[in-house]
Image (cartoon, rainbow, N blue to C red; front, top):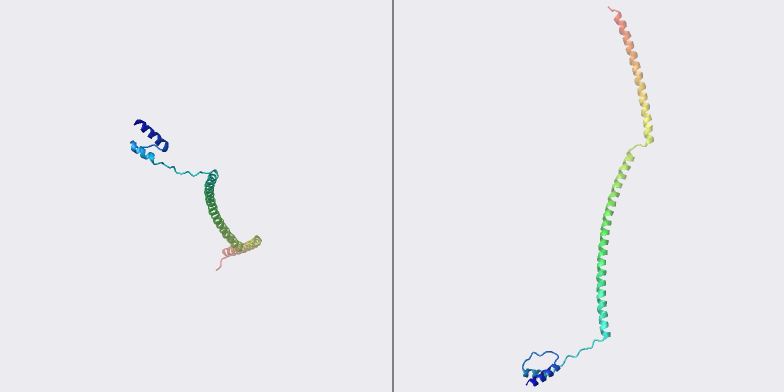
Length: 166
């Protein structure tokens, strides 16, 4: 019996590529009587494998390139947005400065309209000096006239004080 089991084991081991889990001789014979047919393998050709590899690599590379391109687009649009915001702020500042300059120019024009030119001012100054000098001369004339009146009055008072009237 040992010879027979060895032969069965040997034939089963040849037919089946996998290890048998059966321990009885009848089960071993049953397994050995039904032949196991392996599934046919499709040959993978070098050309087909190359095309599949190329397509996989191309799709992977194009997806990475698209991802990096989209990331660069986002960064560029963010940078552009910040520069637009900065330009808007600087434009507002320039507009405020222009408004201030317009207000100052308007005030300057109003001052120019209300002020007197230098030639007119010198002409008026000379006229005022002439008037002042004329008034000064008149005051001196009045003083001399008042002094003459005082002298006459003193003379009259002295004469009256010396003469007695009855």
